[in-house]
Amino acid sequence: MNLTIAYFTNRPDPKIRWFFDSLHRETGGDYSGIKVVVVDFFAHVRMSGRLAQSGGGYTALMDAPCSPVVVAPKPCVWQGPHRLTTQDYFAASNARNTAICHAPDGWIAFVDDLSVLLPGWLAAVREAMAGGYIVLGAYKKQKKLVVENGEVVSFEEFPLGVDSRWNSGSDSKPVTAAGSWMFGCSLAAPVQAFIDINGFDTDADSMGGEDYAAGIMLEKAGYAFKYDRRMLTYESEEDHAQLPVFKRVIKKTHLHPVDASHAYLSMLLTGGRDKAPNYFGPGGIAELRQHILAGGEFPIIQVPQHHWPDGQPLSEM
Image (cartoon, rainbow, N blue to C red; front, side):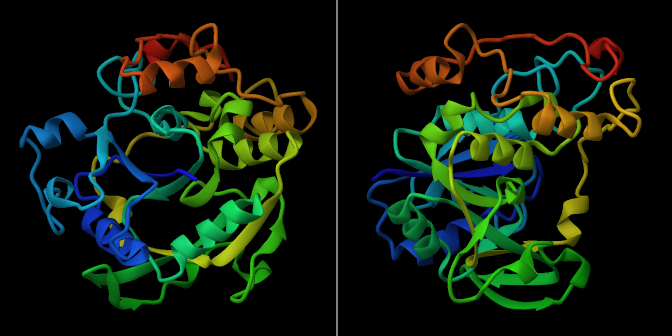
């Protein structure tokens, strides 16, 4: 069964060598049935050599034995050359949907930048694939994280960076989880699952929360979840502060007495939002994905033009 492993970054120094080296350990050098997709906001300037390389060198892409596919996030209204906003905003749904469109049939796993895979990560993914459940991996953010050849050499414990789900898990086996436990930094699911909900909800772009939202939709669609601490990644805490930091905004809104994030959660739980209302064209993400897999290019779709919490034109944001 095919497995796509998607890695996401919008940082000048993503520590991507940590990922490649630890993945090589996990696969034992056998990448049969594995496709690696890197979705990088800086892909164009980086590959042209106009962005400084550091932290082990982004040239790791050029000699990685997994032969990764490197792409920029697809055009969207929130960031990049086709944005409608005055600055770049956080847009994780758009990046994740880009990876889904590059994934062949089978399964897809997600890994955030600044991460190293710990031993057992891939085995946990394979176990979930065999068992037919969506697996939610664990993470710990560590300070002074040192990684050499894909192995963790040293770090300083950072209690505030421990996965909030950690104490509900087990070191010996996956445990039953709710869809709302889904965090985007480490998970694996059937590609078809994300097609069923029309991808990650781009209404969460600029705000965040796209991961748990997708989990809630997937649970409504009948998918089962397990949380597996054996599928563990460590992340560099300090490197999250790299500039530029993409803007996030959670607005006050007439739709909820607290704020837009609570209004969004209400839409998910009681408002009948079972699928993402993304506009990818008439056939949704399913048709767009087939177009991309056939060698096509992403269309430039500049909707929405107003922000859903308050109707503000994106051109003013």
